[in-house]
Amino acid sequence: MGLLDFKNTLQQVKKDLLDKPKKQLLGLKENGNNTLNFKKEIKAICIDPGHGDNFNGTIDPGTSIKVGDVMFLEKDMVLPVALKLKEKLELSGYQTIITRNGDVAKKQQRFTWRLEKAAKSDLLISLHMGYFADSSLRGIQVIYFSGIITSENLADNLKYGQKSNMSDFSVEKLARQSKNSKSLAESILDSVNVLPNLQRNSLKGESHNILRNFEGIASVIVEMGVIGNADDRSVLLNDFETLANEIAIGITTFINKYKDDE
Image (tube, rainbow, N blue to C red; front, side, top):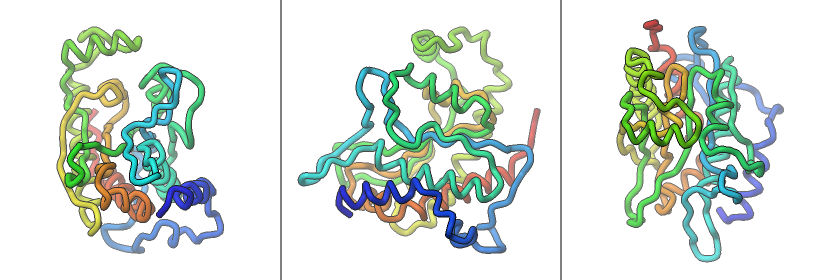
C-alpha cells in the first residue's frame, strides 16, 4: 500500500461506516470466546493513539522510517487501529474516549493532556509502534504498569505538575493497578497471538508517565510491531481492522475475568 492509498484509507476509517451490519463490522462469532460481552464494573475505556500532539512547537511524529520516497510515521500508522478499536468497543456497549482522531495542533503539556482526557475512564489503552535499528526485529510487545514509583519518576512528575511525593500514592492502589494492568496486557497479547502475520513478542512492566499517573483500574501501552520491519508495517497498513478486533477481544477477555477487589 502506497502513502496516498494509506491516507485515503485513513479518511475512510474516520467515517463511521454506519451502513455495515454490526456483526460484519465487529467480525466476531455469535458464540464462543470471541463474543464481546458487556461487564458493568468497567464502563469507560480510553484509547490513546500515540504521538500526533504538539508539546514542543511542532507535531510529534513518533518513530519513523523512510522507504524509498515514502516516510512512514508512527502517529499515522497507529491511528486507523485506534479508530477501529473505538468502533468495535462502542458496538459492544462500552463508552469510549479517544485522545485524538488526527493531529493535535494546539500546544499542550506533554502527557498531561492525554491523562486529563482519560480521567473518567476505567481502562487506558495507549497504541504505539516500536523502533529498532535492526530491521529484522519485529513483533508486538505489551507494556503494563509495573506498580513501582522511583525517585526519577517523581522528579519527572514534578516537571509536568503531576503527583511528586510518594505520600501522594497509595501503595495498595499501586499494587492493584499493577496486577490488573498485567492481566490486561496478558489478555491482549494472547488475543493478538492468533494473527498469523504478527509475531508475538513479550510483556514488560514499566512505570511510564502515562501508566503511573493514570487513576483508573488498568493501563497498558501496546507496541503494535516495529516500524522498521516491513512485515509489521504491512499488518498496520493492510490488516489494521483485524488487529483492532483482536485487541478488542483481549480487552473484553480481561473485563470478563476482572473482579473488583476494592
